[in-house]
Image (cartoon, rainbow, N blue to C red; front, side, top):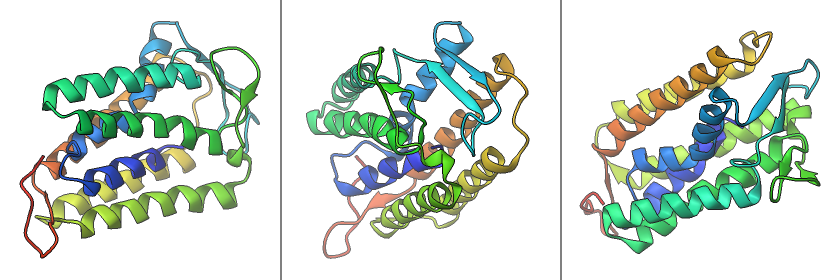
Length: 224
């Protein structure tokens, strides 16, 4: 899953005045992938391109205990929750950010082939929806669009900026699905992924800085 990971970020940003802003929650949503590709660059975690690994994605994610095990993801979630809680002086804001980090493992469990562990060693888990494009693709688009509409409907501000973000999300998802995949895993692939996350996070920060939550009665809430 790629842009579907940002669905919890949109939903969380709109839920409460205590929620962190959208840019922070975009970091939370892909934090373990930031970690994975950074660790892959350093040779710590590993993947390889293997044609037929799944019907949609030819990536064999065979060693990622520090980011995509349940325990590893939990550690990233706790760490990020503490950072956000201290930074925003809000335990609730930290908790929300931590839950968004943990949502990454759950959404990956839906789509990945069995390569997600509990603590870095077998057994591995994953429903494998990447082998069923007619399910995985509508699911990813549906989650993302539903969460975007929820966020948009519960906030007020300029219309153009969220639409730019949505267009970027859809464009990058299209590249992810339909562009030729690299022949092998390596630094170019890892950096490309990190750049994509960075662009989307920058756009989300831009959107979040310019939209306010709507209180009941139609009054705009002060940004968190």
